[in-house]
Amino acid sequence: MTTRHIALLAYPAMTALDLIGPHHILSMIPNVCVHLVAKTLNPIISDLGLMITPSITFDDCPLQVEVLFAPGGTRGTLEAMEDEATLAFMRSRGQQARWVTSVCTGSLILGAAGLLQGRRATSHWVTRDLLSRFGAIPVAQRVVRDEHILTGAGVTAGLDFALTLAAEISGTAHAHKIQLVAEYDPEPPFDAGSPERAGQETTQALREMLAPFLAAATQTADRWRPSASF
Amino acid sequence: MTTRHIALLAYPAMTALDLIGPHHILSMIPNVCVHLVAKTLNPIISDLGLMITPSITFDDCPLQVEVLFAPGGTRGTLEAMEDEATLAFMRSRGQQARWVTSVCTGSLILGAAGLLQGRRATSHWVTRDLLSRFGAIPVAQRVVRDEHILTGAGVTAGLDFALTLAAEISGTAHAHKIQLVAEYDPEPPFDAGSPERAGQETTQALREMLAPFLAAATQTADRWRPSASF
Image: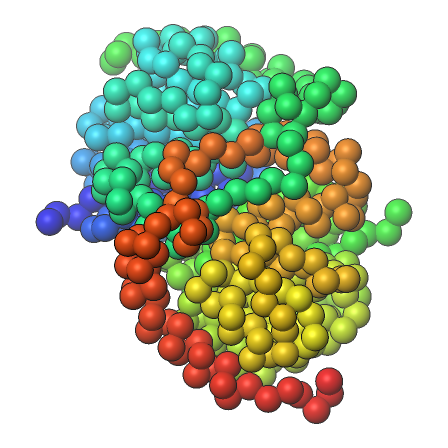
């Protein structure tokens, strides 16, 4: 059996958990080689201060990958959405990848690379509607599949997303083993994980906290034009 | 308000998700300084190949920490359980910490440091019963609190554990905000997250896969003697 290459994009100020959740699950698929792909091999500082070193550069990443994945973040994601080298990498691998995927605001990077045009997709609840600026159809679901495009909602949706993807690649029986070894039988101590469940006060407080980011993301999205190559 | 120091132990071949899940949640508590503490500042390679750089050494970590935390792993955890520098660090901070905590097999490190004697605690389902070798009382729950000792079950229990801890430190209303911004409203695509739910075939396959690790962990535990300082 040939090795399946899984390319996880990494960039400054990304949200590490967006990446590490899927990294954990996808690394347990048989015969995979999981790459942390970045512009250089210099250590990357995440939005919460973790220092993580990429394993391969854009240039050295295999051309044919089974999975292309973009994690989210806040300001770092907006920079990635307008970084030509990042977009060129995402386009080149995205056009050939078996699966084009993201978690959280990572779908904005897929959108900026032109990979979501006409596709149903999701994002963090705060940025979900922005997907339409990239020609995508926003869907309020935790994991959304449109053919080979698989996107997850905010941060922790990475686990549900990655288990779904693992089952597609290695079968349900193997995905069950991955779930059991990760003991993924969640019991959140509170029921505040979505705007509907968290209630108006909590949701409004977060909307206010995230308003500057959403405004900046909207400006970034407004500058976007479909690439000539699509 | 004074800064609360949160000390997350890091060691070679740890399971990165054990650490990064709690790191994400606990970093959102107001007025915290979250440290990745290790023997040296050299990059650490996780059990699945991630390269993560610690932020502070054992020697430089503040003496008084709000939270002391140990992530799990497999072979790397067994080495940490017998590493004198690691155990000395865990003992010195553990004796003064407001909260002594772990996820997955990290509780075996707490046990080896003598911090669980007479305490109710949990671990990954494969290693849970081993806790009794360290004088602890194994409890089959996802998150177990015994006074200032808070332990979580396998890998993904880190999210439930950390939200529980965040609420203890910063209050329930703030924990709700953390949960909402992380969109932690889990929807596992399968129901195989515990031995009871995964069924006999899946569980048996994993028990066989993990048997060499469990045998090695049992040997390590059998060599343990309570330290004179406890």
